[in-house]
Length: 258
Image (tube, rainbow, N blue to C red; front, side, top):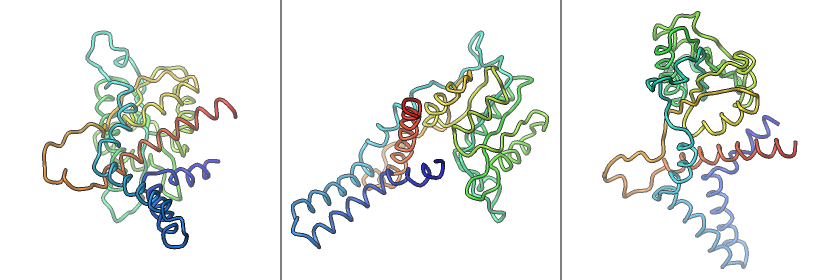
């Protein structure tokens, strides 16, 4: 089931859907007499390219996910987070290559999460930093690289706990709950990923306090000439949103029917 999800999910990504529409439209136009249908399908593919590369749709897709939880506050009086003894950082992928610098082997989202996790850990005396992420597709365990980065930032080894067996968010939730038991903990992950993560952790009886980072929707770069031209960034944002909504939908289906 795990591999089935991994292979099927990209089929629904924005670029995949666009290519399918354009290919189907071309086949209808070139090899059948359904010229009107071919034009409609081709136009749909072109329209999808335009609204994803120029329009606000990708940000609109991400906004509900990234606005679900506010940034974590440690400074507020009697802030519950300040008494947590666990800070959990979820990994976002690696590309193991000894020829690359260490930071280039870790996904950019993982680096942002690590920086926030370290910042929070240093603000809470006595807390432990849990790094979560296993091996996927014959790569090294994600936590090996994450730990190297964390250790390079003067974090004591005794304050680091590794969870190196999980392959996806649900397995992360299950494994981390076995470490923290019923203790409340701070959960650090990307803002777009937080809704799905919180749902899964609560499913396993956990009490996470969300610390979303790495927000990518609604960022205003200011007026510049590049805004007049199509950009691949919209496709990337749309795919992130689609991935999360599919994941949330899968959780709902499992809870209801499986």
